Length: 539
Image (cartoon, rainbow, N blue to C red; front, top):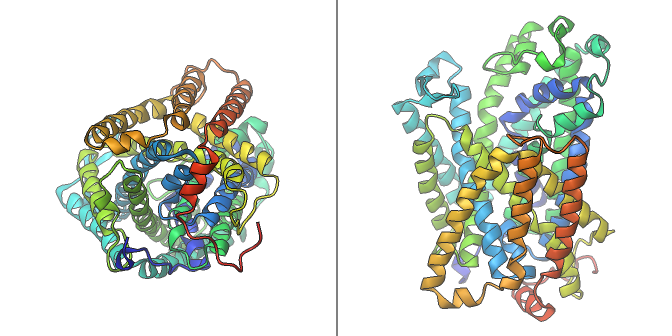
């Protein structure tokens, strides 16, 4: 790329950290305390730090490799350095399938919360889908299109402007839940805890909160900082702080909010147990509790945050998906022209492509967009599987490369992180995984078409490094089929399933590491990325 087309390194440490936080703290923060409490009761406060530790292990392995190789669209591009173009194409395509659905999902969530106010009820028509969801009206479609265009427009004028807008929005998204938490804690009572005990469902309840309660999935937004790592001013410092610090800040926020929620629940609502606690209407449980406590103004603030949360998350998702699309193009699946950066230092062509796809998805799923969530969460988690393998492989392949952040006990942490990714994929369930197979097949078809048109691409795929991904996906598909989540056949008992996923993951980890490129090939690929500044920490 020429200088005019290169990305601008203009995001500071705070800005990148707030990208991670902005991706995590969305509208889900308003419902997550209820869903977790329904599964675990008061013990739900333990689910958040446990899930945070799990995701921090994944963030740490990415912190080492992305600080060493701060590239645009890191989630899709980093595996290319250790395993070649074929693996890079596979991972970046799967990630893109998840990323490109994010902005339409957040757009519809923004409008759905806004429509709870009578002045905006024209955005949706009566429920028409089989699952009871309301469809966007004609005016709602126009409004959604305007929001999607706004996401792209706000990103089009450079990453520095995006970072400033996102930082301001994220401050608000942090302050509002914090104010709500303080308000709830002023009415904290141990009566709800005494009603059925601290852990009415025991360890199983906490694990259920982490899985079906959605706690672990709430932290996945940290990945957005990875995608914009190539535009950080001081990547050797900003990337580790953003990835790990973002999760820690969100874990603290979610934990205290969960505590405030538990202590503010009316004990009379627990006659049938925590599992049957009411959802509190369209505006969510927090607004309902605050209204019941006579805090009507704060209840309105919850509604405002419900609109602002997904809007901010959509803004971040648009930025990230643009960078991820660049990685798909750099890997060779999309035309190279898509990866060109504008004079403002943003991948405008990539974002324009995503905007077109997003508008198409908006129209296709206007009657029931929840199906998009399956592609979103499942694809994104699956695309994270290469991080722990890549970092271990690169330690062997390029041992002399400067590593501004060097992860201690890497062999242990990386294997643990790979098991965590396997467990999260397993928890997404059979229904999600089988649906995800459809875009994977489409990706294979697109790649085959590209290989026919580009003979050099076919020669560069490094099939030896790619072949293990087939058995890995097939094994995960089988585990979800016989498992206990999302339509699985429930053939694996509780506990046995976790052991099965862990053993399978550790076996595949060894195969994946052994499938890495020869050292010379990896070194040649890495050599194209400038090393960290000389002031970085020694490797």
